[in-house]
Length: 139
Image (cartoon, rainbow, N blue to C red; front, top):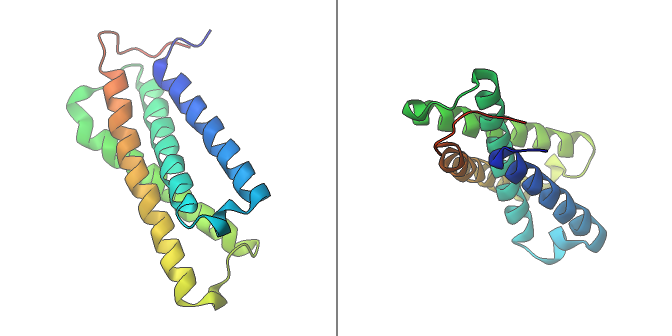
């Protein structure tokens, strides 16, 4: 049984992002609802940040509250790196095109900003979950 709240919440959010992406592709929601892409990128950034904090807390066995800034920076950096890799993935497979011009750059910048902001809030949420009386991670 998974006893870590952070792991359960991260897995739930990962499942939610996967379901939202599946239905968005199937029902063309990214093209029909203009803000849907922003929502998915925000949630994906939060998921990656929470996973980053989860891995850090697993590696160090305890969560260090006094290094909140360091943990937030690492979590946001993780979300940024995965967001950039995702944008390169879309470019490589022709999901987006450089020939779209300013629309491509505006969309990519919006996606990366949503990844970063989701990563920031995911890191804060992770911090709040891990600062309970039992700071150890148990699976």
